[in-house]
Image (cartoon, rainbow, N blue to C red; front, side, top):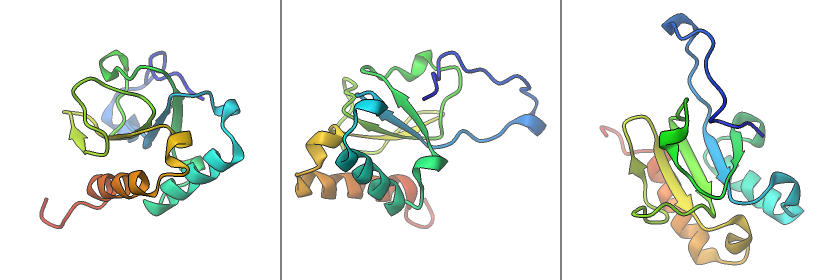
Length: 131
């Protein structure tokens, strides 16, 4: 997985500027995820027309976008808590829109939390026309 803090664009001219992929932030190490958690993440991403290959996955316990050199346009966080940010609500900063949820292991068996996540993801990826 990539370390967003150390990554910097070599060519910053607009012609070389590529949009950042959607970033998924996990509070656990990728290699420690169970098969069920990976499948759940794949299904969550598929629901917003993404795949594991189309996103950047970052492992961290604490989310602090102010330390990132390149900010993603969209971010989904699992198990990372940011003070003042409510779970399942879209938060918009000047560079990033994000939705935070409980860890994948918590979401596995909780349909109500999955539904809450889906409401937030719909707002993040499929905003109403005219917004």
